[in-house]
Image (cartoon, rainbow, N blue to C red; front, side):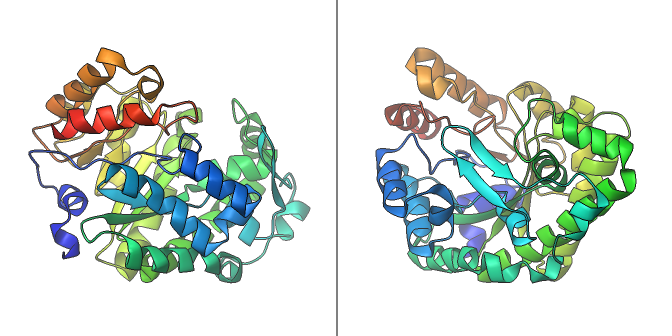
Length: 345
């Protein structure tokens, strides 16, 4: 099957389909028993990310089980900081930890954007493996964290509830903050170009903490870096399709993001009403989303009715069905089957 015949690629090209393509953020993950077994084999999370055979396996697991219309590369947004020279490790039950960037001296210890490929080469091999192994009708999504979201982790050394450390560095040492954003942006471009060359057909840019920025900060640190990344990727790899996800943005933020980045699709989080998205976003681009991920824990009639409501509401324009955020570890795999049946009938 040619790339442009796949359901996912048709939606990204702006086609309104009778049945929307479907995939899920974090579809390869801890809610699946087969994932838990593979992760145990790898030993730890980073070893799983950097083992092309095992990373290929966990990427394929939800495709085998559910027949999603797209597979998303199994990796992590914090591999780019590690490739730039940051220390990265994961604390069991607590999440990622990094060495921090809090001064010019800390920043100066980082490497050059063009030197990330030695560290990240196993990720490119995973993509090559997937291009060979995926069913012909399944699109392959590569991804990266957007510069602001990656910066928040590099500055704080961990996830924070309000991104206060990054906001403080932005205010107190703006030159260091801006230099860090530029370096992450350039490294992300390097990384994504190689993902596309290895076989990724779609790129998703995750700005998970976009909602922390308001006023002038949003266009400067969310929209403009995404626009630069999109522009360079299109110039270098014109065939690629791009999905942006400025999670937590205001309605106006979403509209401006779409207009100024020229993405092929915008992913909406659970705070955005589907009808509003149909009226204000879908007229300009494909919309991806946005079932409440908690319904895959609870299940029941509301899971079915909400799934059908979103499909119907967004049925008059290009739509990719997804969640408002990632599926959670406590989701019931049987509820994913129910969701897919409600989408596809």
